[in-house]
Image (cartoon, rainbow, N blue to C red):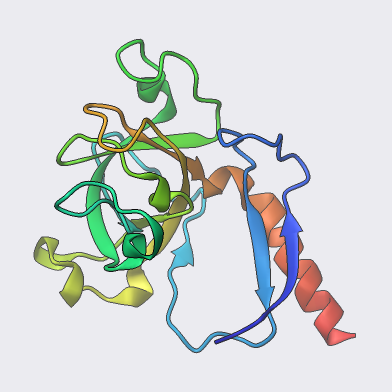
Length: 183
């Protein structure tokens, strides 16, 4: 297990969940040996209806769990992407979602649970729609879950920070870490 060496919170974070800058970077004391997805950049256009994947703890068959029972099995959930303008329509979030955010609605069309805050929204390599045969080097991190309706609410999409909206800040911070290591 690697220890966090340095943490930096986005300077424009407004102190509430739906801030498009509700993000922090953690620098580990040593480089991870585990594969991780590449961060999606503005060179790729996402579209409403595109299949993305979320990793999270979610609710079990008996509804949401509490305490340690929340973290029993990590789940992968398919979500249909909804861009910000569609998500802000009167039938969904009624203009309450700021720019720099995305929405996703799972195939059960229910909201995720509180234990899923911070969950990654991923564009995965899924040949024949099978996650387990894809190439992890072709996976991309798109966003992070920050808000949504109460657990299991029907037809309410989850809200994600679009990491592309924070790309310049992320690159600047990571660059400054590498520069300080070279000194």
